View 1 (cartoon, rainbow, N blue to C red):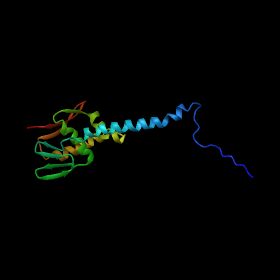
View 2 (view 1 turned 45 degrees about the horizontal axis):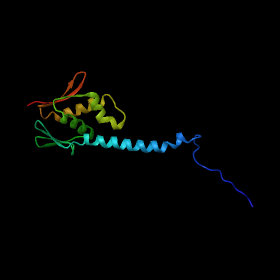
View 3 (view 1 turned 30 degrees about the vertical axis):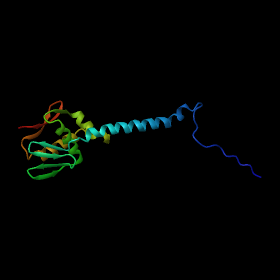
View 4 (view 1 turned 30 degrees about the horizontal axis):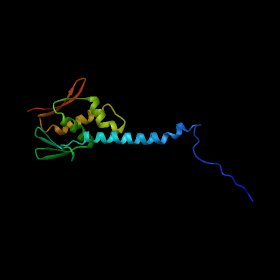
Length: 148
């Protein structure tokens, strides 16, 4: 008869199992923390109002559309998020760093000139109403100016 002995398998831990024994607990705590942070962020982006009137322009944030003089203009997701920030605070200076953080934070990589490119695209789409303008506040950020 052959006697076969199997070696126990598993993770080798330190003498008192402090290091690896606590990793599953830390993972669970981290998971719960990240979920709670993410759920707190979503109400800020998901405004209670999805329709904004900007001069003669109607901005539908939910549908990502501008309606100007019975003409509908579709916006990209990034353009809509950017305009939502401006529409929530018209005629107020919004810091460049805040815009970059709120728009590209989840993607991890922020390209410096991307914001300028999206501002330029928004300006072109809003130019049908001369009372609306996105202006540069030198050294600070941008402002959505709506004149009466």
